[in-house]
Image (cartoon, rainbow, N blue to C red; front, top):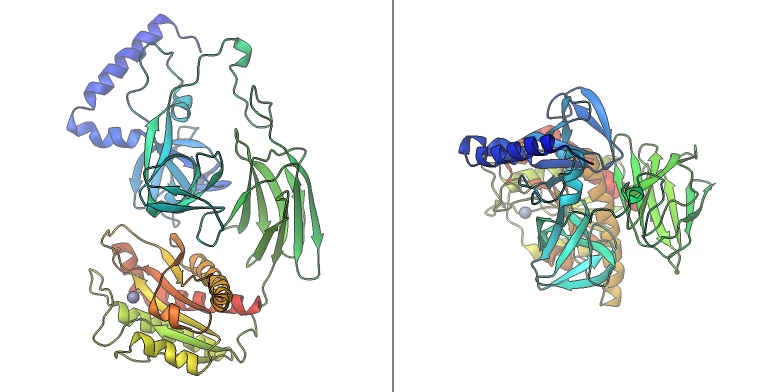
Length: 516
Ligand code: ZN
């Protein structure tokens, strides 16, 4: 864009004013907020009149839209829409990028405000652990594709929950856990000025790209309706990695195919099966290309995904699990953590973990028994039970699964969300099978908890907890929410929240049994 000398002067003067203004403390808050850009991370995001889902929807924005941040309240951000209106969006469905206030040297042509955020900053992940696994998807249930070491600095491509998608030195792309990296925003050199006018337009949407390596496209998408499943087969012209995640309200299943362009794929494919309305296709990212497939689902749909050996074919099966009746005759060990002289963690309002654990456990046990399961409680009152005692009973009575219920704590009171732990041991043959089953059970319970409680997904994690290691059956330890987080403690203290948690744990267990 060519600017007149007068406009350039005005811009320069206003830049100087804003630099000076920001030295004044009174402007710091505004300056910090104005520097942030929200990048929408989901297909469609509701914009509300206030911070929270109880406020009315005033507009909607789409994937990768970039909106200046005006304010923040809890997990919600107030943003400026393209129409000039202001509205609130949920913070966990977007990425926040920081745009430097003082931009590039005056010699470069000033960028338009819309372009400045995109071209001037990039996020980097600095590895702060000795060895960090790089996985094929966001979460420890995804396979390890590589490892990176302390102080490696990797460009961040995108984010899912607490996981970051990074490019490693080999050029491969994979996911690392947010707890093992430091994320920072660095300025990047603006693109070189184009030599010819014809090349200035950066392609958007389906337009061609200049001077980039072509990536192979999707060759076909075939949908078959089987007896109780819908099978979708996606074939690409090149081997690819993928990541997947789900979104609620309405329920959607998203696959990102890395290094794959859309090819001749239709924008939307009508399915109309028991589990899938339609499959939509679009770009999640260009250069390198990531094709995003969005399955619009019926409520309560589960899925499995697998890839051919040459990684050119992805098969996705969606189905509605038959939960009803799957509890009949099962023996389920429920372990309310701590008790007696051991309160577990205590929230700032005085809520004791041992009491919350027991309440959720009793509620879950009640539902399970009503569904025909036999429940072994490791404690039914406020007393001490040894860690080994807990699994001894479950092992002797040959429980089918072991579910330990806890609430989490962290010195950093901003930590929040739901996680599920498993003991992972793939080295011993007997333990490998148990690890796989524990992981399946964890996936089922974690996904139901997230759906029911709507808290942050802290993920499925691995830990060497005594109760998980010594159980002779698939075992999980659920950390429903953080008692150390004030907002979550308030929730946990309500019976309604604990009812929901108990129901979700039961649903997850049913889901697990219905899949076996
Ligand atoms: Zn605990």
